[in-house]
Length: 141
Picture 1 (cartoon, helix red, strand yellow):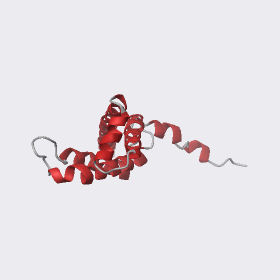
Picture 2 (tube, helix red, strand yellow):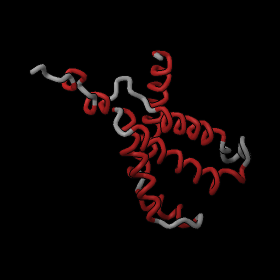
Picture 3 (tube, one colour):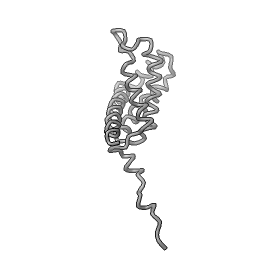
Picture 4 (cartoon, helix red, strand yellow):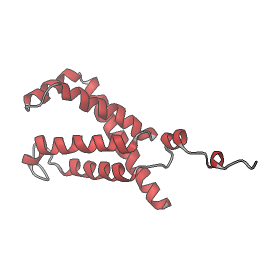
């Protein structure tokens, strides 16, 4: 059980840092650039704000360990969309100019694992929502 938690913790932190940075870059480079790119590939521009927000806020949430399952499910949806809409036609390894979907597939697998299993180790959510086992004992009359 301890090994499983260490593994989930490593996945949570790694996924969180990567997506936090991706979201941050989208905002730092000008979110309107991302909006324009989304529009150019046939997606509604407002989705750029949703994706960047999930990446930024969700990445931070994963790092500190709040809402791991929900955030991971949202990241999984983003990765499915990115793979199907952008990367699938490039193939698994890409075309020499642009990467394929191999990394997207790895992120998807990490996100699905965390969405199913969660990650409690060093998690703020575990500290905040942890049930106190001593409060459930009944008092003797």
